[in-house]
Image (cartoon, rainbow, N blue to C red; front, top):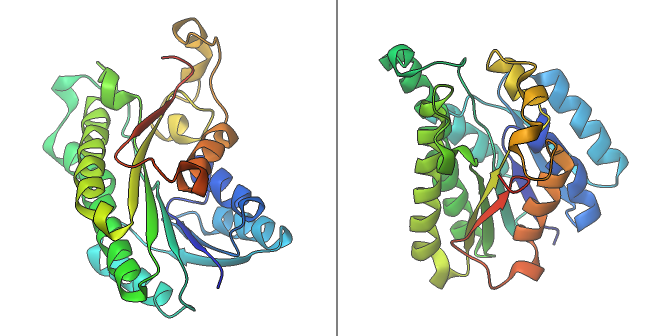
Length: 247
């Protein structure tokens, strides 16, 4: 019976690094979820298979509840095993101050980052309970949840604050079922999300604001995520792990 790792938003960045590292941490099966980048997801799947694990690629818009249900319907057809979730899918809108945080913009950020994340957790817990083999969840938050991202992405920061609150609630609710839930808060990481937010060079000027003097790499976040999912973290739930270079 092999462990099943579900990684949402796994076509690039932190999600891709986590999926690629998973086989080396004992995962025999990895669900590689993507929103739009099918080619990126397939490239990750190729690496996962080369490392000796089964890769299942599934596309779904996590803000579409029916699409999430369909994704888990497919996952539920797999051979049962312990279910581990990395709840990573998320978006950021272009840099903006409060005057430009329009209802449509904020709604879209929350539809993906909060509503989608909650539904992915709900479906994952349903599957864990159905299979009766326990599970673990790591929600990917952000240091922005503490720092607020003033004048840049306050809506994104607020969405990640919601993820931290969700983590606390689920950890307390699910502890007696042996399901651990934790939150990991990355700092500035070298991923494509900055370009998608309209600031491809954002990290170049941030070194002096980071105590360790540099941005992090996706693999550094992936290693921390997989530790939280591991037996080595068996007494850790409801925790917030900052992997932010001291920021």
